[in-house]
Length: 277
Image (cartoon, rainbow, N blue to C red):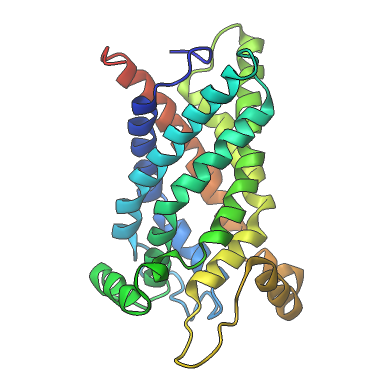
């Protein structure tokens, strides 16, 4: 199993699921603090440091299928795009493949985030209450509030992260004369994620505001789109408002990237040794 042969679909599916669950469960408190910092209520009113594990059930349930959908799509799209270029590798293949992966993964990530974030700021006490209340507020569409904004955040993030990740790995492998191991791959993913995470924080803030907005009966929505939401935040809170939650976001992605890519590559190697691929 090397870069030339690509990663089999089912192997990427399983390894991605393992990696996603590992990082989302391990670093859930940091994600909770990020959500509370970005909420309109403010960090302390949204719960402060209390109940850092609120929403962990929904996060755990959605992490495996979300990550599995991303990596299986990413590896497949990367393999297909390489076949059209005579097996020549280019950074645009990684950027395009990761974008395809994000669009698919968000079909799972967005409903998960809607439930999780509303629990993180204390609006619902239990998972069942969060799901039933969200459903009653507008059916299936209520679980996809902020889908467009999430995709608009994830695609730039992946466009930055994955080409850097793949290039770091390629350069490291060339320097040492052999493929990178899971720890080295994890380090590459961690640094790439930190860069991408910091640059896309404004989009993350907009996504959080849109998902957490509660509209009273008969009232108009305040946040109606990504650009409009960014304009409101900038007008009312300045540039600093667009970067709320920057520290926990970058910390989460840096540590999470190391765990995520390490678990993904490690799981690939372990699973490949079973002889099923």
